[in-house]
Length: 128
Image 1: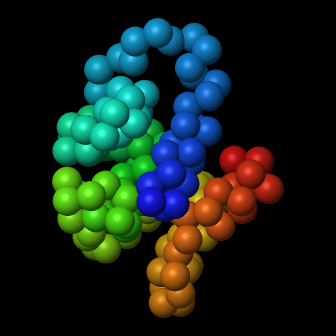
Image 2: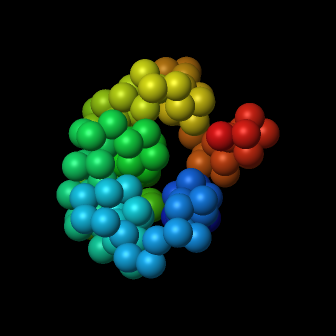
Image 3: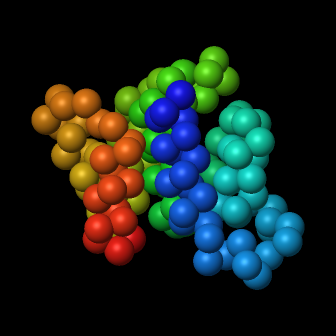
């Protein structure tokens, strides 16, 4: 439950600058995917976030990586944990300079637990 909250907080923090200017998210965007995620419509969120991620939205790539990394822990039975998909999305985000993705991948490579709360603390400290 704490991880679900942490992922939601991570996603919401990334959206704060946009929220002030948009009432309804544009279709196929990170903002639409985040809204679906927040309303716990996880399969729909994945579909929309994948479009945004394919179009290079680093926030969508990070959130997809975390959703697949934590799978059932974060999204219930709607999303199966898939470390391969998680790595794929996180690698895309890291290639664009996401410190969260780089850090999470390093933790995965070391075989250490990857608490989302620690990723949030690190991203806040780095200004991301």
